[in-house]
Amino acid sequence: MINLRLRDILVAGFCIILHLVYRSHKRRLLPPPPGPTRWPVVGSILSMTLNYAHISYQKFGKKLGAKFLYYEVFNQPIIVINDVQVAQELLEKRSAIYSSRPQVRILSEGIGMNRFFAIMPYGDEWRAQRRMFQQYFGPRHFEQQLEMHERMLRFVRRGLLPNLLTSPQDFHEHLRNCIGGFSISIAYGLPVQRQHDSRVRFSGTVFGEMIAAAGSGKLVIHFISSLLQDIPDWMPGSGFKKAARDLRSLIEKLVEDPYQAGLELLDEGNPQESFVATSLEKGRNYADFEGHVNRLKYTATQFFGGAAETTMTVFSTFVLMMLKNRDVQCEVQRELDSVIGSDRMPTMSDLSRLPYLSAVIKETLRWNPVAPLSVPRMTTSEDVYDGYYIPKDCIVLTNIYAMLHDEDTYPEPEEFKPERFIKNGVLRDDVPDPETIATFGFGRRICPGSHIALPFIHLIAASILCLFDILPEVDAEGNPINVVPKFAPSSLTSEPFPFPCKIVPRGDRNVKELLKEYIGNEPI
Ligand code: HEM
Image: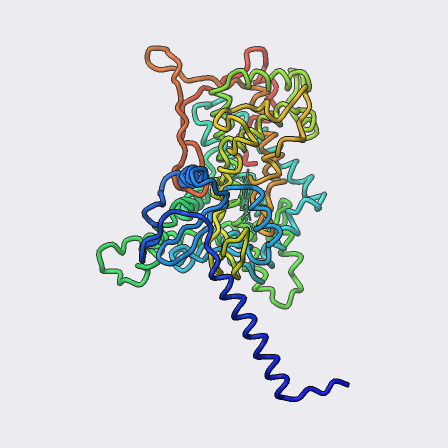
């Protein structure tokens, strides 16, 4: 039997502590990843741009020949990952370290955004909300998937296509109403107006403000406003605090109102299948029912937040690309005509037989990544990678834009070329697919809604091009207007700015007849 004396234990303990201190010290002696010059106090703030930050990080990475970069702002370390393999190594293989989110004071304490699990730090509450989301919306819940597909079809046919026929000039608004309306319907089971639904509008406005406030391009502003968070309200320059409080109360209304309306509908006894109805029923006997209800309110609101702006961004980009690339649009229509014909509209089961459309959607996701700098992460302990030291509490920006514009993987990345994903009518498996790589993030915090977004996007694209042509608007002299694409410069999502275009029924199609049974005024 080993007989350890107190002295031996103390010596062993001392040696272990010494070893740990030495190891940690040795790690800290390693250099940080390459990056711009850092100045005392302000760090690399002078090298950071507010607008289109993803492009400037990409260019700077290329200049240094570095796959990931190191910045510092007021002592806050930041790494920017420009490369897929590095992202996989860190965010997937070392996910125990890289799965949290930074808690920017102005966003969490000020606006209260950290109550949504997309923004929360890694931990029990995040796990509980994400589990609740997956239990209802996860890809393995077959019946709910069928219900969701059925409802997508209903929103496209009743909500979107008839509106495009009667007021095509408002296509941005119609797309928003259709995508947002679907989210509200699935989350709360509430009826949605076919045009200008007030809940869709309100949710869109509030989430639009949140997404604009949270953009990674705004990091510098976040730091400065967080430092100034404690200045009194009467001081000049404190206006941002009031703006944050106003947004906070709008969020509270956004979380509460549709939930209460959903409850009333349940009490009336004729509800539509929804996340709220199912999750409430499931939690009836839980000991902490109140906690369960609070969680499900935020998770339901999160559904709209995750789905609406992102899907809308893909769609605006798709319409823009069809406008700028008429040959691609005609090729999609040729494929649709050969698979579907001219006397019916696409169904969910047609989608897998449209490889060219699929290549176009992949190229749309690649060409203008929806969230070019993803949602920021934060390290929960120090790390060493490739000989570089990465500290604890380091903000990690995933530059999805740089990854999907890497010219070795996607030659001529600025060109819109669906052909890069398809050969002889078959989708290529030797080109990394933006539907599965980078677009939706990495590791434990990867987007849990990709399997909802992708079929919806394919369905909307197929349905529009089956019935309509997307053509340039003409100016006062009758000349086609050349649209120059422009994008939100520093928001979380890279939505194109509104642009003029004409959506007209296809000449060889009786669109009114095809839509006859779907036209009406009653809510969906
Ligand atoms: C084309 C559409 C979409 C794109 C491109 C997209 C992209 C992303 C990205 C890049 C992230 C961050 C992942 C990371 O940190 O690595 C994310 C997170 C998230 N997305 Fe999506 N998304 C889309 C649609 C959706 C939809 C339809 C929903 C809901 C139904 C959704 C819900 C969420 C949620 C809840 C998170 C936070 C996950 C977490 O922090 O655990 N997204 N998404």
